[in-house]
Image (cartoon, rainbow, N blue to C red):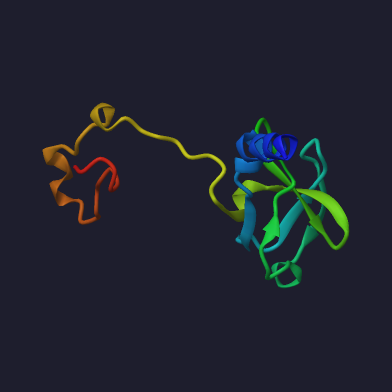
Length: 121
């Protein structure tokens, strides 16, 4: 019994057990470029032929900003700019105090300017 408890606790607190599972929720580009692991174009996939169900991300190449997925039984690489991935892969926290506020010359700009909900400015 003690051995089973130790195995269970180890599994609960390992990094893999708490890792986020990223998945592609939407294909944004039409056509989507299918790449190899070096980032070279292999072929194009029409948006109408892309899966409509979420596709799990198998690997992420941060240096090239590519994700590996399985499409039609093949492992391929896709550019993250062509995809909507949930939860997002790269989230950058901006320090609110370091952001510049809009100046008086911006008063003629009719767009909404802000830093986001986290900054309260």
